[in-house]
Picture 1 (tube, rainbow, N blue to C red):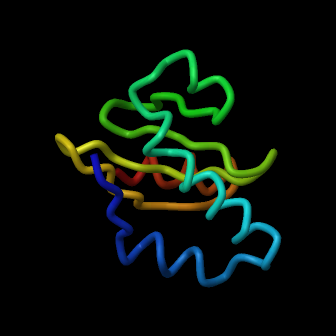
Picture 2: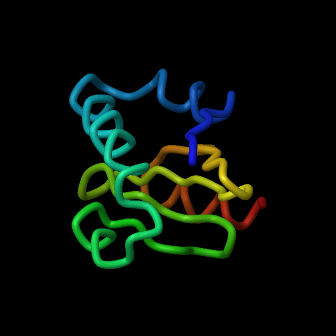
Length: 91
């Protein structure tokens, strides 16, 4: 598997404060190692939202959304709970 960062994600990530950006980087670093291993998901907080959309928890309030396209995980969005709801309703 591989990770692909979309333009939407990069634009949203540009506005993160340094602490949140570091948390997102750390969460993404663990994603490939743990995705597809359900028992490992509990530690990294990966969960399906609306297949093929998944959520990865970066901090208590910050979520990273990605979409599985075969062997590619497209990281498409980062934001708080309200932003995630808006993203899903517009998808």
